[in-house]
Amino acid sequence: MKNILVTGGCGFIGSNFVRLALGELKESRIVNIDRLTYAGNLENLADLKDNPRYRFVRGDICDAEFVNRIFAEERIDTVVHFAAESHVDRSIEGPAEFIRTNILGTFTLLEAARKAWLAPMRVTSREPRKNRFLHVSTDEVYGSLGETGYFTEETPYDPRSPYSASKASSDHLVSAYFHTYDLPVVKTNCSNNYGPYHFPEKLIPLIINNALTGKELPVYGDGKNVRDWLYVEDHCRAILTVLQKGSLGETYNVGGNNEKQNIEIVQTVCDLLDEKVGLLPDGKPRRDLIRFVKDRPGHDRRYAIDATKIREELGWTPAVTFEEGIRKTVDWYLVHPDWIASVLDGSYQDYYEKMYGGRLKHD
Ligand code: NAD
Ligand code: DAU
Image 1 (tube, rainbow, N blue to C red):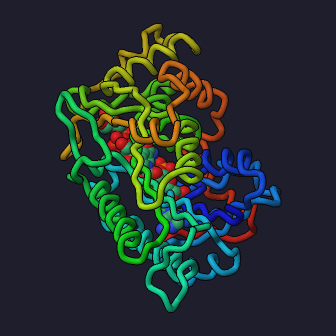
Image 2 (image 1 turned 30 degrees about the vertical axis):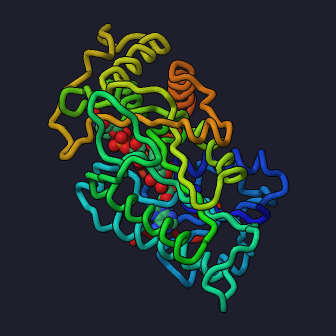
């Protein structure tokens, strides 16, 4: 892993991964390509700008010419593919961008890897591999669970939102490139991440920000939908583990063993903030801000991961309990009010101009 291409490294999980990987893989360089959509924030990696083992290039993973050029110019031998449209509510409002980036973008990267890594005259090759294409995916491809049971790597796909359908499609393409071309791929499907640099449209950072500023806290439906919460650093360590030890063509489910109802999450954040910064100015607890609102269409009821395979085969387990992780997360947001403000008022997008001298234009 000399020259690692990370896609979507300016997003939430990608930025946490780039920082961790540069620290852990001292012999590796990381080239981060990111289109800098609303979810891509260069400030997330501002501290790495002058690191000689890191390069950022703004670009779109759907642009084959751009992606091929990066593969050749940087002699890419490893890919960790995060770039995606990631927010379920946005996929309900406007699915087109999800289809484009998540499906076409993944296809473009697979094609670039196939051209760069597989000898042009041979369709397949069984030689020992120095290359890896790690595709980061989601447990949402498996659909919705009832009150019992867990998603395993064998659970049939049953995506129910445009987001999860686009991720399922990209997963199938990745598997197809393994079976058809013998492209050296590995795949991870993980549960809900939380932690620093999480965009405040997702449940936990949205609730932290609203509760801090005394705004209403929207809970969809009856608040009893269940998610399994995984601290982002644990997830990034799982990705490193799979990159180093995973078997080609395999999928690894990654989970935090932290099943919680949404309402429990919201109440926990309220109580933590009451404890850390005091009650609201009118003397009321933050739980008073909770409002049950119209449910998300097609809202999956419960996700839960069986992570036996990655634990038994590769020795990975999550290190951070939910109690620790949520405290660390709330603390991070409390000491980064400028980050939240710049994300909410859009000024984080000026960073590109400041740091790289080019203008950031959104198509
Ligand atoms: P994010 O929305 O925070 O970041 C996505 C990044 O991709 C952004 O930096 C964005 O600018 C970039 N991007 C989007 N379209 C692009 C394009 N066409 N070309 C280049 N870059 C583009 O997402 P995240 O939460 O960090 O998720 C990362 C990956 O992990 C995604 O593939 C997502 O499906 C998967 N995942 C996320 C979670 C979670 O809880 N956040 C859980 C399971 C899986
Ligand atoms: O399971 C993995 C997935 O987790 C990832 O693949 C997605 O990229 C990621 O966004 C996340 O999807 P969710 O839909 O589970 O996350 P979100 O934070 O949007 O919502 C978490 C739960 O909270 C979900 O049941 C919907 C609910 N919710 C969400 C928001 C934004 C609310 O009740 N109120 C809200 O305002």
